[in-house]
Image (cartoon, rainbow, N blue to C red; front, side):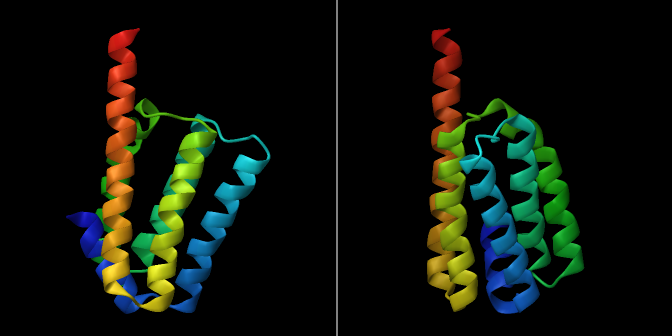
Length: 135
């Protein structure tokens, strides 16, 4: 629910500076993966970097503040989920369509990208839960 509202506002209001920040977060994540530096703290850093830029792209300070709070509350769940290069590649595969939908101002593509991203997170959460049960 929150993510769909965020993407709608970002598509409507993102400036070129906001898009550049999203691209920078994407490139930083890709570089960390390439260098083999994608570990717990880097995962948190890159996810927060991307989502902070996404919240700012809404152009609404209140929404940005609420979104940042939600992301801060979600950090412990990120630690619990799968944390390796595969997860990093999945994050990139989710973030690229979000950025592209904002660049193109395409709400339908943005909603589809958000739904895909949520599905990926659900997959990792289910995988993590099953792995813990089998240990």
